[in-house]
Length: 207
Image (cartoon, rainbow, N blue to C red; front, side):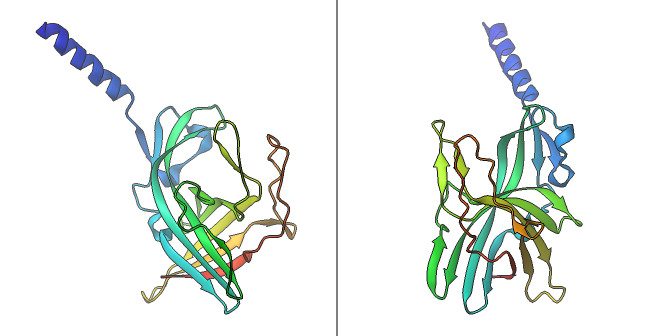
């Protein structure tokens, strides 16, 4: 009986060993070289600089965004359907125009309108994220959420060398001067073509 028990423990240990993550620094992410159980982990803290509360306020437009880091998010590699894991940034925001609240989803914890974070550039100070402005979300029969109004957001971290206040350059990606409104929601045959309310370019300050 002891032998069977020991063999069972050994077998379970081998299975656990085979299922262990292959940890790779997040900034080395490459969609063309992904293997089973790869975990692109933020071991060097490259996302930490973006984490926190950032505000833009010009007297007319008030915008507040709160970035968090979520660890070991599961995903499927589009190249070959390989399951992988990675750390990412997620965020929601509040927008007021002339004192009137347009958006406020800061308290939402299950539907982040800004997410991603493995596309890092320029010495890891620039990052591209998936971005949805409105709360116009379609949920399919499998409980997958699809935004009907989304684009790509580029953030550039600008550290203050005097250690007073850091800044974040917010840039919504455009193409030939036109907003990139995502029309790829072919699964549901809908799209949201209403104008964006949040300014395309802002300089936010760290709180």
